[in-house]
View 1 (spheres, rainbow, N blue to C red):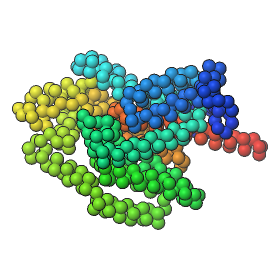
View 2 (tube, helix red, strand yellow):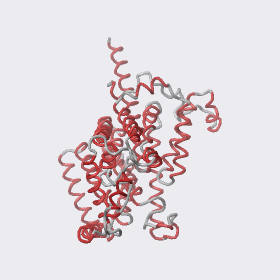
View 3 (cartoon, rainbow, N blue to C red):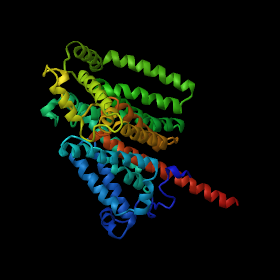
View 4 (cartoon, rainbow, N blue to C red):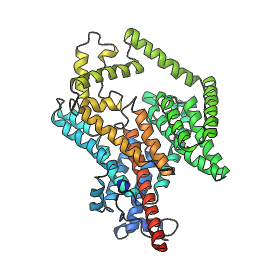
Length: 451
């Protein structure tokens, strides 16, 4: 067993229970027995995690409440020494280092203290990650949490179709986006794309095992997500991320014949989608038009504003390359730049606290030191998911999607994408540790039996 990926070989697992995962008593009685039953405490913690997976695509407030309840629940099951020991592992150390530099960075920032503390809060979610690793290395219900998230996203897809044809039913009447029932099209597309890519591994596993009914069901669900993203809600970020994620799957799990078949099918489906989907063509045409308007007349289009943010952020980074301008400094820097422009109605006058690029967001505030920590975080989590199993595949897709999406957004610091990363990586990482710890124990038993 590699010490790099293990919290501890003595990490406790669930107490013995029947196949259903809990003692053969009433569910409510079992939940209420948590005061004196360790297995019930683990079950209650998993129940809160299931609620997070269910609500994350739908509700910000509900998710925050359940995360708080989950932290309270997991606190009653902790071995503090084992948890503290895990902080030294790279997959925990670098997220905590990012939180630390965000806190320390308030000391040299020239922003007001309200802005400094506001900028610390989105980084604070990484304090939850060690608890997720710790807990899901003990419980066997990690796969169930992923299934609940998939079901929740499938329900959101159904709601997307409903509000696409009946906009009055959308909960976003103040800022309606076609096909978006709650939140926004970026969050929805990220969730759908992750579900599609996450299902590739079990589909391939079902086909290899000749379980064609299960493979057909998952393929139909994946196709439903793709059709929605092609005809209802088209995201530029998803258009870039999904081919790369598919390429990773092809290279990792298929031979040359399979690679050629998938490549041909992808080209064919892309051509059909381009021909049949006005929404897809409109997004591509709009992107080109927005770029042209920005370059010719400095129009504050979506594409134009991103480019403006990136250009200014690079200039801000060059002014303080080593440790940056400090936590919360992005908005004051943009305000200062806007005051120096003559045309207050164009892109150059726009002010933001989010440059829509994760690297630049970190670089402006904490310089090269912060960027090094950010990349070390991604690398540590990528290394964790090198195995050829479902948990490793899902964790890898979460990391890759976040890295690609963070080219165009600050997804680690955004609410939905940030929490998907924390719990996606935390649950999958815990599952990987649990599986590898178990395989190590089995090898030890085989060695003893043959000694």
